[in-house]
Amino acid sequence: MKIELTLIPVTPFTLTPSDICSLFKKGENNINMPFYVSSIKGMLRAASIFGFRSRFGDGYSCEDTFNKTCPELTEKERNVLKTFPCPICKTYGMLGLKGCSLFITNLNEVVEGKELINYRFLFRGPYYISVSQKPLDIVIICDDKFKCSPLVILLGLHYIDKGIIRLGKFKSRGFGIFKVKMKNGELQKLLNNIDILENELKKCLGV
Image (cartoon, rainbow, N blue to C red; front, top):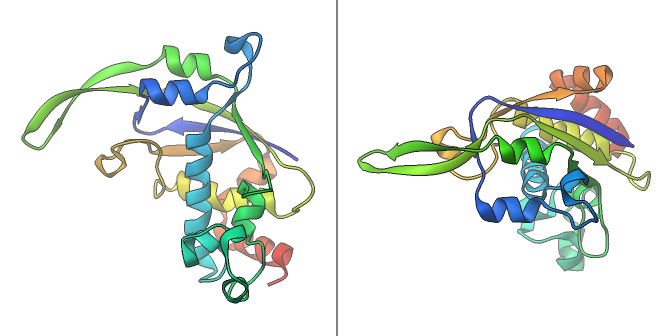
């Protein structure tokens, strides 16, 4: 399944040279290729973990429960989880399992739109921080091995849309807040109604 969405910045998000380097996926024409963004996938993974903890309780994320990924768990620890492998690892990947792939398709616009802002931390600074305020066009591709992946991703996107989970550095200072706009209208409705989304995910997981 292909999920298309736009992350619309409410506040600037940080963009450092190392971030930019990590965005590029090698290809014949780098500037025209889709770009894999591990930092956004990490934000989504953290948001989905937060969503399971908030709406479902314990036992749905190996990282949240044991601070390990599923392949690292002992037999005793595996039995604590509601499902094994956990829905987080099935969706976002683990050792031996790729999970969904995430791409940003307008990276050039994002990088070209970067700017230096003058920022002061209380009595320190000012500091010049490289940021962007360009929307991020995201494509997520999931195979059919785990049917619940789109719902797990939507659960995470809900908490990104609420500004609870943020991207990049200086999150505690208010940077990296996004609103989420889904290309598919039905997915947008699910994103906006957490109770219905929770029920659909419970049915999918069989819990």
